[in-house]
Image (cartoon, rainbow, N blue to C red):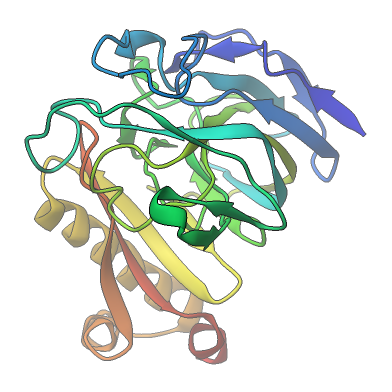
Length: 292
């Protein structure tokens, strides 16, 4: 099985970044990611106020997926995420939803499927990729930004067992990923979940001639549309419009029926509120969705 070394990093989603590897649809690869602190030598007790944020959230890639062309959809099957080393959590002043002084970093080591968090609280690991995306349609976008390309959505459903769908804007899609968390709650409210390096096992599929505007996720238990915007309200509007489009094009609903259904079985949820754009999802129980 081919491995993509974590030293092959970029700090933006861009059509001009040279690919570090060409992968075939269906090929299983392991993508090694660095933790969100990049090459900053963060240790227990350190403070995060002096981080160079332009060197944070390093992204491994890009992967050039053979056969992906503009107007296609890229489906990324996340088969496994193995945590590597310790995870570190602290506070970066100005990043979270509340004003807060920086706090010293606490380090957590996974053991037997869990970490011992502060106060001895045992929390099961739930790895997710905070960042995963493709080259955007326009200019390069810094790694800390989410958008229609995916990116830094901090969606906890970018996890093992999920298929993450992206629009393809450029030849090869140019897939990148990073910012893995040992676990993360919706919103990532303080701005920093336990950040860790990881090994991500995945395979890509190209869905020819089926264009989408923004990411979608088919998780083990749920289906969702995902959108990022200046405000949560606008992100929810975009994700709702995308969900209506799915119900119309894939399930045969009329637009009126689809809009009504969003208030019956769909749920507007927050992915994150700490990045330059806000990210929301509209989600539905997978079994119900697939039975429609």
